[in-house]
Amino acid sequence: MSQWTVASDDTEEEPQTPRLTPDQLRKAQDDVRACYLSANPEKLASGEVEALLKKYAGQEALLLQRVRHRYGLSVISARMYKRGEVGRASQWSAVDVDLRADGCLRWAAVGSREKGSIDVREGRADAWDKRTAGRIGAFCVFGSSIEEEAKDMKLTLACSTNEDRDAWVAEVMSLRRFFKRLHRERACQAEEAKAVEEAMKVSQSTAEQDQQRHLEYERRLREEEERALQLSQEEKRTEDAERSRPQTLAGLEASLDDALRHTAEGRDHESREDWRAAHGSYKKAVAAFVQAKRAVAGMPGDQRPEDAVLELIASGTAQCKEAADACRQRGRSAALGAVPLLDAPRRHPV
Image 1 (spheres, rainbow, N blue to C red):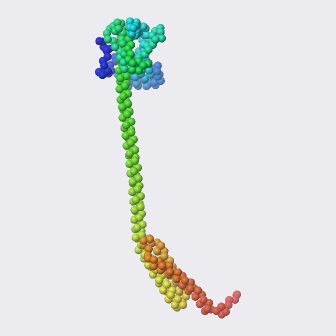
Image 2: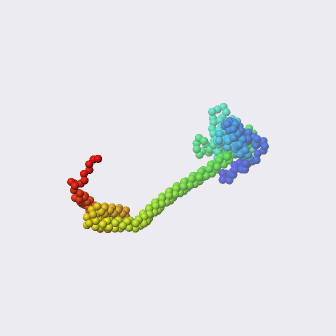
């Protein structure tokens, strides 16, 4: 068994990236530049390619595989010989073979329209001994059909030399390892994207809950402030009412005392037929009753006096107004009776 024999999938591991010789390093860098020159020359002119070469220093082979895979470029191509199918195993025909970076190995017969392809992304290439299939430089490629899913295929090819054969086997196996690495990276990226999505959902849910709690806190704070303001206003009204109650009650009592005093003075003047003085006392009594009525109006509903006091104010006001009007009329009548119109001194113009 030669160095190209492939172990099972369970035990195969990706080998360490080999350290390239200075010549191999320059060749890999030139191959990367050539890929960009044919596929994306703008990046080559802008200096991005040189930045990539610096970033992948020591991993130029991996960078070359990634660039070829991204732009769907050819990895290796050559004219070789293809062994016939069952029934024609001894027949070899010339074919042009092209191994693409997307994992597709294509072949086309020289001088005829026969052609085919095989997917080697998960396949392998083997050369068991120096004369595989009885021919020097021969090797087998195992893969799956591109036209028919889940169909295994085997393709036996032969290069002109064993060195060319070894190069083809190495490229096929390197491409296999590249896709295994690519699948692992994509799986890790998918897991990371899923974890990020779940974290974003949790973060969004937490943010929504925090916002709801913040809104609820603000609502409760506003309610507490409104209740505190209402209590403060009620307390202020109560304090104002308690503070003004003695003053209002004292004012009511003083106004009633003044009204009763002026009423008594008016009666006294009326008994002496001093109508003018009686009229003035009754007018003062009416003003005192009006002041008492205003004092009652300024009192809270639960602090107003009894109905008897209200009736006293109303009846006293009406009686004092009538008495004042009567005194005014009597005063006029008495003045006319004291100075007869015929005996009044006549005024003559000067």
